[in-house]
Figure 1 (cartoon, rainbow, N blue to C red):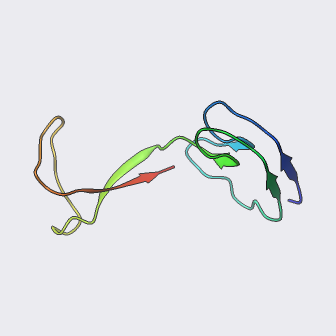
Figure 2 (cartoon, rainbow, N blue to C red):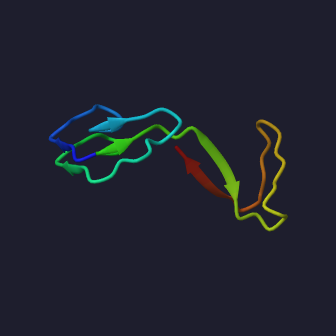
Length: 79
Protein backbone atom coordinates (compact mmCIF):
# COMPACT_ATOMS: atom_id res chain seq x y z
CA UNK A 1 0.00 0.00 0.00
CA UNK A 2 1.02 3.56 -0.72
CA UNK A 3 3.94 2.58 -2.97
CA UNK A 4 5.20 4.44 -6.02
CA UNK A 5 6.18 2.39 -9.06
CA UNK A 6 7.92 4.79 -11.41
CA UNK A 7 9.77 4.10 -14.70
CA UNK A 8 10.15 0.34 -14.21
CA UNK A 9 10.83 -1.76 -17.30
CA UNK A 10 10.47 -5.44 -18.14
CA UNK A 11 11.16 -7.12 -21.47
CA UNK A 12 8.00 -9.21 -21.52
CA UNK A 13 5.49 -8.97 -18.70
CA UNK A 14 4.68 -6.73 -15.76
CA UNK A 15 6.77 -3.57 -15.92
CA UNK A 16 6.37 -2.89 -12.19
CA UNK A 17 4.81 -6.13 -10.86
CA UNK A 18 4.93 -9.56 -12.51
CA UNK A 19 2.90 -12.47 -11.17
CA UNK A 20 2.36 -16.15 -12.03
CA UNK A 21 -1.12 -17.69 -12.17
CA UNK A 22 -2.78 -15.73 -9.33
CA UNK A 23 -3.14 -11.96 -9.58
CA UNK A 24 -1.94 -10.02 -6.55
CA UNK A 25 -4.57 -9.06 -3.99
CA UNK A 26 -4.95 -5.87 -1.98
CA UNK A 27 -2.98 -3.57 -4.24
CA UNK A 28 -4.60 -0.37 -3.04
CA UNK A 29 -3.47 3.23 -3.08
CA UNK A 30 -0.37 2.60 -5.20
CA UNK A 31 0.85 4.93 -7.91
CA UNK A 32 2.01 3.51 -11.26
CA UNK A 33 3.74 5.95 -13.63
CA UNK A 34 5.70 5.45 -16.86
CA UNK A 35 6.22 1.70 -16.44
CA UNK A 36 6.71 -0.40 -19.55
CA UNK A 37 6.52 -4.00 -20.71
CA UNK A 38 5.17 -5.73 -23.81
CA UNK A 39 2.39 -7.33 -21.76
CA UNK A 40 1.03 -5.37 -18.80
CA UNK A 41 3.01 -2.15 -18.51
CA UNK A 42 2.36 -1.84 -14.77
CA UNK A 43 1.00 -5.21 -13.56
CA UNK A 44 1.08 -8.28 -15.77
CA UNK A 45 1.30 -11.99 -16.26
CA UNK A 46 1.23 -14.43 -19.14
CA UNK A 47 -2.13 -15.94 -19.96
CA UNK A 48 -2.51 -19.32 -18.27
CA UNK A 49 -5.90 -20.53 -19.42
CA UNK A 50 -8.02 -20.30 -22.55
CA UNK A 51 -11.75 -20.93 -22.23
CA UNK A 52 -14.31 -21.27 -25.00
CA UNK A 53 -17.17 -18.92 -24.18
CA UNK A 54 -20.50 -17.95 -25.70
CA UNK A 55 -21.30 -21.21 -27.47
CA UNK A 56 -25.05 -21.75 -27.90
CA UNK A 57 -24.90 -25.39 -26.73
CA UNK A 58 -24.86 -24.67 -22.96
CA UNK A 59 -21.46 -22.98 -23.35
CA UNK A 60 -19.79 -26.39 -23.80
CA UNK A 61 -18.02 -27.55 -26.94
CA UNK A 62 -16.12 -30.82 -26.87
CA UNK A 63 -13.18 -30.85 -29.26
CA UNK A 64 -10.45 -33.43 -29.70
CA UNK A 65 -6.86 -32.27 -30.03
CA UNK A 66 -6.26 -31.12 -33.61
CA UNK A 67 -9.96 -31.32 -34.54
CA UNK A 68 -11.28 -28.70 -36.96
CA UNK A 69 -14.64 -27.06 -36.31
CA UNK A 70 -16.83 -24.72 -38.33
CA UNK A 71 -18.33 -23.28 -35.12
CA UNK A 72 -17.84 -19.60 -34.36
CA UNK A 73 -15.90 -19.53 -31.10
CA UNK A 74 -15.47 -16.87 -28.45
CA UNK A 75 -12.26 -17.31 -26.48
CA UNK A 76 -11.54 -15.87 -23.03
CA UNK A 77 -7.89 -15.46 -22.03
CA UNK A 78 -7.33 -15.66 -18.29
CA UNK A 79 -4.23 -14.70 -16.30
